[in-house]
Image (cartoon, rainbow, N blue to C red):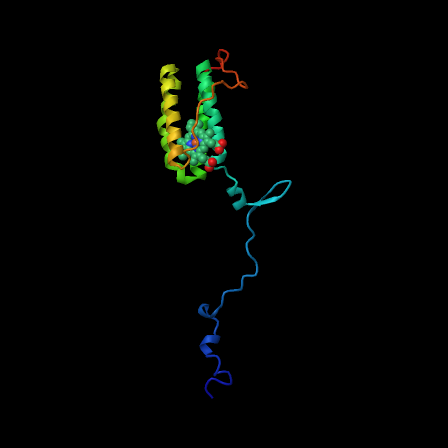
Length: 175
Ligand code: HEM
C-alpha cells in the first residue's frame, strides 16, 4: 500500500533528515549584556556609553580653561597657556565624538579661532594673542547662538584665577 498508515499526514520526503527539514533549535539562553563591575554595582555597556559627557558637562571645563589660558599668557606663563589650549582642543574633540551633531561647529572652531590662538601663543606675541583670543570669544558666542543657546554669552572674568601661578615658570621649565 502506497505510503503506509501515516501517508495522510507526512510525506516520506518531509520525514527525511535534510537541512531544509530541520527547524532551528529553540533559543533557550540569551547572550547576557556586557557589564562592567564596580565595588557598588554592575553597569551595562549602554549605561556606560550614556554617561559619556555631552557639551553641558564639557563646556564649563572649556570655559575655565579659556579663562586660565588668557591670564596665563598675560602673566607670561606661556607653557601653562599652551597646556590649557591643548586641553580645550581635547575637550572639544571629545564633544564632537559624543555629540556628533555638533562636530562640524566644534571642528571649525578648533581649526579656526583655536589654531590662530595657538600660533600667537607659539610666537609669544601679545597683540596677536589678544586679537585671536577676542575672535575666539566672538566665535564661541556665535556658535552658542546657532546651536540654540543665545542665552549663553561667554565673557572674560575680570579677575585672574588665584589657584595657579601665572608668572613665567622657572628657567628650564619653559620648553
Ligand atoms: C572657548 C570656546 C567656548 C567657551 C568659552 C564656551 C563656553 C560655554 C559655557 C560657559 C557654556 C555654559 C555651560 C553651563 O551650562 O554652565 C556653554 C554651553 C554650550 N556651548 Fe560653549 N563655549 C565655547 C565654544 C563652543 C563651541 C565652539 C560650540 C559649538 C558647538 C559651543 C556650543 C555650546 C552648547 C551647545 C552649549 C550648551 C550645552 C548644554 O547645556 O547642553 N560652545 N559654552
